[in-house]
Image (cartoon, rainbow, N blue to C red):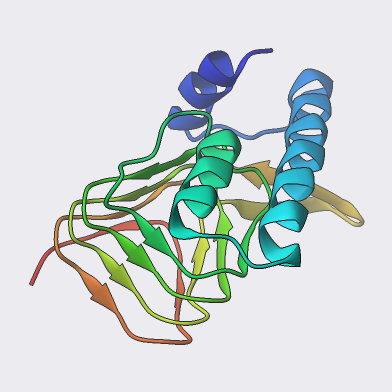
Length: 155
């Protein structure tokens, strides 16, 4: 499975329950932890932070992106950020289903974006689903909030 095929499948919001998908998610989680451990373990300049986030997200992030580590994610490859985005310290992105931050979004301390849901179908059996969280342009998030799948409009 590739990142592109996973993202396309996640857009369908179907259960993430095949062996191939689970194996892929495990591999991506390991990669995300390797990068976030480096990001969060010591001081980095703003350019170094953007470089590590580019590795984590799988594309070159905008030069206007500002992030104050620590930053946490369990996947990393389904996060999209627009221009002039600021993410304050201790934010958590559960991005299997996708988290998109539009231009000008300002994220406060300790905000959680939970873009994966779990459905229990039988005792001790859970299935991950892949909804998205999409804050649109110029949205500010106060500290210590959790956001579940939705589109959050500007204003």
